[in-house]
Image (spheres, rainbow, N blue to C red):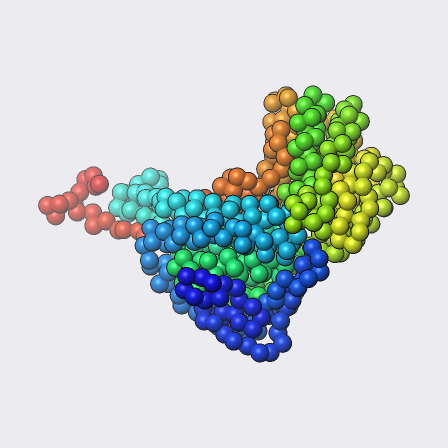
Amino acid sequence: MTKTGETRTATASRYRVAGRWQEVDDARTLPVVSPVDGSVTGSVREFTHAEIDEVFASAGAAQRAWAARPLTERADLLHRFADRLAESAGEIGDVLMMEIAKPAKDARDEVVRSADYLRHTAEDAKRIIGESQFSDSFPGQARNKLAVAHRVPLGTVLAIPPFNYPVNLAVSKIAPALATGNAVVLKPPSQGALSALMMCELAYDAGVPPEVLQVVTGRGSRIGDYLVRHSGVGLISFTGSSETGADLARKAGMVPLLLELGGKDPAIVLDDADLDDAAADIVAGAFSYSGQRCTAVKRVLVIDSVADELVAKITERTAKLTVGDPRDNAQITPLVDADAAAGAERLVHDAVAGGAVLALGGTRTGRLVRPTVVDHVTEDMELAWVEPFAPVLPVLRVGSAAEAVRLGNRSEYGLQAAVFTRDIDAAIQIAARLDVGTVQVNGRTARGPDHFPFVGTKASGMGTQGVKPSIEAMTRVKSLVVNLSGKDLDGTAASSRP
Ligand code: NAP
Ligand code: G3H
């Protein structure tokens, strides 16, 4: 129970619409089935179109009052929300763990990380400052106009996070939106909806008005089109697959979009790299949360002369990963998407049939894919290009840094890349040639820390996130031009004005 005495989670029979609790007895329910053991973790309701209309109408109306509240007040509420989230990290983490089979510790860490994100955003939002300029800085203009530009909210942000970070990637949209005076309609992933609902109840408990942060549950494939085309949307912040993102962009019309999409991040290893460090980073980067991270290392591009040694080190470390139940903190856990498990297995089999060498793994039991390293993958194999979202790591051997760059850039994706070398000049040269949002030098690909700019090129996305970039993306510049009278204080024409 929250301090206000309300049940913390909405359920299929009890849910909020436009901020008010509704009781229902019909069958519009969606069970949330755990990939851990097949148990029903809970259920949520599929919103109707009429309810979605009601949600946007009340969010739009409440947004104006929310934006009018002092910024420090909104920031204070986010801090209170952060405190409650941190206090409930264990409780929410447990639900999250069962919904998406994330290892227990990682699930809890996701919630704590989200509280930190809220706090950082609350502080950064206070530092948004505009700019001013006189007209005479443009050729031929007198000093008779003063423009004051400041940032205003966009209205209602439609936030759609993916299953792999249902709390953190919801908060990374909610925090900058609310801090800057927007309302939010959150469409959580179906797998992850329960933890997202719990998280929002904590926001209300902290004092965030329920009309300003609303949750619409239901399958994206059924209600997604209606949501993204809704006239009440001021901006869509979407994280998920490139396919869904591209489809959404076609349908959304003239609405600003922030899209964080798929990736096939390469780890490029040069012949002078510290191979132990590189292997440790690559294994952590490829296999944490069983490879279900947009930023996972999804292919290794290694110079031939050190490939045998690197593959041996990667294989040795990967073989030590624990496989099993997230409740026991196993590192490799059942995949959320059963099709992804079958798809990963097929990609590996096809590559091996085409001449690649299985260094480790290659088997699965249901959703549980054993950590897999495939060596001697070549350009003609699908495994070199498809994002498996599974614990599968292909290794491509290359003759030179230039070839690594060519293969890096041949991907449809452009999220991140890693370069391992002791030669900082080479790292910088390679980084400059890679068409990706971020290049990590001697470190694994990763989004965090969360205030760093996070951006994808090509099919990996559109727009920049982070803390400050998200604050900017969720606001627009509004300019006030003060036309000066042209008179001096004594009423005479001024020769030089302020
Ligand atoms: P997804 O299937 O695209 O789903 C993402 C979200 O979109 C979910 O909330 C989903 O709801 C919703 N959705 C589905 N169809 C929709 C539609 N037609 N209109 C509007 N919303 C719709 O992706 P996922 O399987 O959850 O996540 C895995 C993918 O996300 C991977 O490709 C990964 O690389 C990418 N990802 C990228 C980043 C990044 O920051 N670049 C971060 C995380 C994940 P339902 O759950 O109800 O289907
Ligand atoms: O899955 C996509 C996330 O944005 C990745 O975040 O690099 O912290 O795991 P992460």
